[in-house]
Each structure stands twice: as structure tokens, then as C-alpha cells.
Image (cartoon, rainbow, N blue to C red; front, side, top):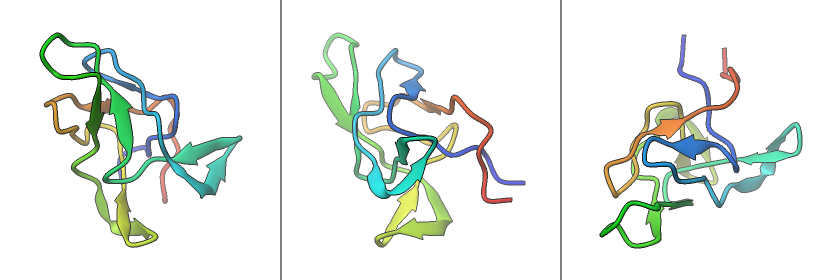
Length: 88
């Protein structure tokens, strides 16, 4: 079973929020996040925005891997999915 996918509005372990997603992949009104999408990061010294750097190579959206629970941001944070939405 794959890990749950991450959507705009989901959180990171640094307290940030997923800011971008692909509007072609709406689930309950929220866009699915992919590698390269923006995430806020409130941690001191991390800037205010970071990017998703890992995702599911088995689900590409416009050529970019979809982000899942536990995938990483460039600042070192991990993503936290708010729903149990998977491809299974």
C-alpha cells in the first residue's frame, strides 16, 4: 500500500503549509501537491518558502512525482498528509 498523498493546505513537520498544487488533480476541492511545489517554512533560518523535493515515482502529474505523507522538503521537513487518500 502506498502512503497517503499530500494536498494544498496539508502541513509539514516544521509547522509549514503546502501552498501549491496541480489544479487538474482536485480531491474534495484541494489540489494534489507534487515535487517542486511550494511549502511555507516558519523555522528560523529556513527562509519563508521551501520546495517539495521527493515524491511518488509511480504517480507522475504533468511529469512530476506526486507528494506523499513523509516525503521531504528542501528545508528538511517532512510532509504530513491530512487524509488517507492513496492510489490503491
